[in-house]
Length: 124
Image 1 (spheres, rainbow, N blue to C red):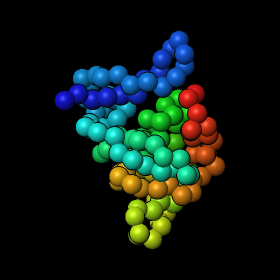
Image 2: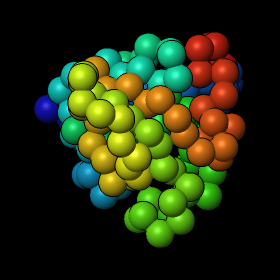
Image 3: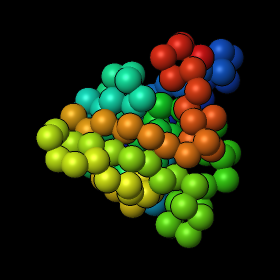
Image 4: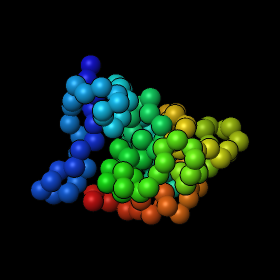
């Protein structure tokens, strides 16, 4: 198995993926075997399993999330989201500290995350 990392296609500026044998510390994503469904503000996407929500957001929008000024360690709280899984009650969590669960729905997010994930349904 290898690690798949999000990369930027320099010519077109679009997010792509490439396979790399770098370790978890060096790569963008933790090891995964499949993509799982996630709903973000009414948009259905597929993201890598075994990763934090913030890493999954980074998979979807590499440059905006990477350059968004997130602390990645729960200090800044700018990655707070309201999530719901199945019929469980919705709850507020930090996306940098919460592992994605198949079928999870992100109902609300901070303005910074909204900005970074804008145009999620487009091919930019």
